[in-house]
Image 1 (spheres, rainbow, N blue to C red):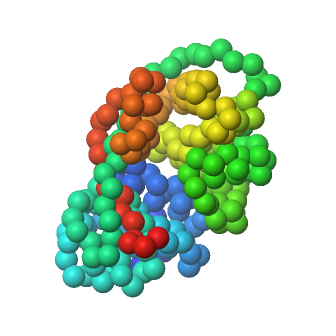
Image 2: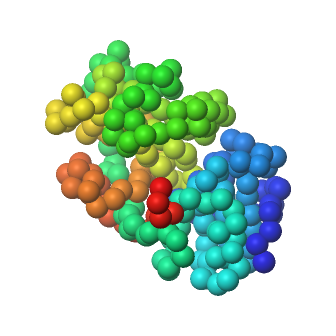
Image 3: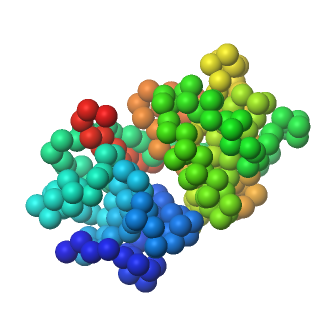
Length: 236
């Protein structure tokens, strides 16, 4: 049975990206918000943040799970499991481990950490398409304020973040470069800067990427070490 959880003690969290993401949201928001809800079952734990669901565990494709997904307002799903969910389209993505990077030289004035969010929104939108500005701004500022996430702006044209840290991993996300600055190796430089930051904290970088971005990350020394599923509700 899937039931709502109101404390860490009620959650069963694995030492994985999915478990770490659920924990990071619990650390940032606690258990009192309706837009950020946590659930438990015998199979694992679930986070619903706005319309995104994160499933940590080996959930079976039964009627209870399908009903839960249909009636929870979920539009996207991150999960390790792979089965048909009515009304959703599955995309495979790959988990990549970053190379160990002990040092990288750059001008300090070229890098801003946890900068003003308005400086990076346009860069992200130019790379990932339309993003709800209010939701993104509120979520990122809240996560930064609670020490869960870190945002990097490099040369005023490249952005990236450490979404959260869990165990011996730091999970990198949202690497993006302004259209007029692409093809100059700036994204690769920013990756190295983030990798050095993680190295100083004695943790390894990792991220999820889709097929179209695999060549870029492999070129920058990343190694495929796993895979997962991302489901999107048809029509969005």
